[in-house]
Image 1 (cartoon, helix red, strand yellow):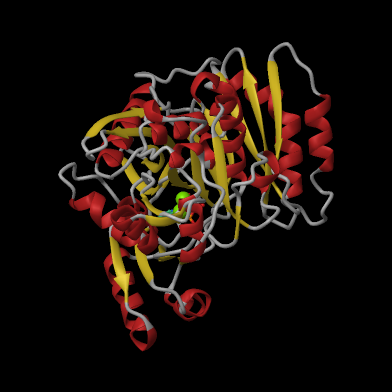
Image 2 (image 1 turned 45 degrees about the horizontal axis):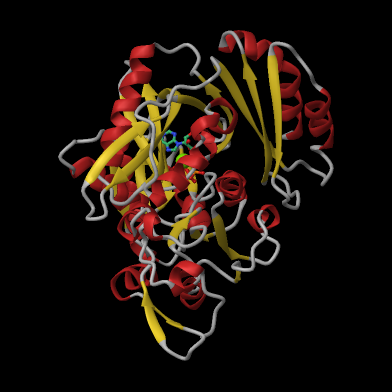
Length: 432
Ligand code: ATP
Ligand code: MG
Ligand code: MG
């Protein structure tokens, strides 16, 4: 194995920024839009990001370096190759091979130097492979939260048997939870792709047909009045001792067909007290995990204002895109870099604007469906609202997240909503 080695490695660098000879390199497993925005935050910080993903992945388009690796973030050999080129490892997606990350942390990777000698290199991994492994399995993730010291509220859940026993297991779930209930894939799902709302016994067979080849669990229906999300920055010492959890404000997320389409900051028609409670709960949730980085906590607000944790993402998240413009001194992407490298994190995260709305651009029926919306974003100027268009350099396919627009306002969320109407109308039309 022969690599272009970073200067730090040649100097025997072991992860301490003070010992660095050059710019630190973060190796990132996955190079989609989250990786792309991480690169955009890294560029002005003089941080190099080495991406492991396909050749023309969105993140690679935004950051030019000879350290990128072409291949899959599930391929152990490629992950080792990335580790050998990086001072730190992190992820933009949780569906990665954690066995190899565990092995890299424990045993390191062998790197051949130009003089023929070999060194063992151990890039710190943040968040920890332990966190990533736990979160990969949504059922185990929530069992962990429920049984933690903090007794975190989650929806009741039941593991579903596989194969011939699945039907009886679904009947048990219906007896326990009533209808409707949510049948979910334990692993690998995103944008609701592993979810099936089971409304009656008639839907057992179609549910098994749709998801039956996956490992499943059933979740009690949460009759929520609103969905919130809270991004949390977690820091810890190098020996794994929790140092701090700092939360961004709670935001309101709107999901249509289980896909996030809109994010409102601050949330509409909800008390500040509930938003504060959400922030505190999110910090409790993230304090039970391991490693440094930003995390998203998705929450349901029930009729009586109580909160239920839906799931956690161990990385920057769609609900935190707004921070690029609304919290410019520490966007979620900059925070991810600061946390991984153990650079300073603010004690409080207060947005610079009173309101923002994020609208996802999902691919429409044709590859040019979103062009009208992009034109509107480019041509809108207002004293009362700023418009920021992000396109991810992805091929447009129906329902695929290909970009987003953030609108920031200078008075209330209600005022901004009025100004945002033409955008919302076009975004909604594209989904039809
Ligand atoms: P993501 O892209 O956020 O990772 P995912 O595929 O992991 O999505 P979930 O977060 O489990 O999916 O669910 C997607 C959406 O489906 C939720 O945001 C919520 O709107 C709805 N949902 C999920 N679980 C429940 C539930 N138990 N009761 C009611 N609605 C639910
Ligand atoms: Mg999820
Ligand atoms: Mg979710």
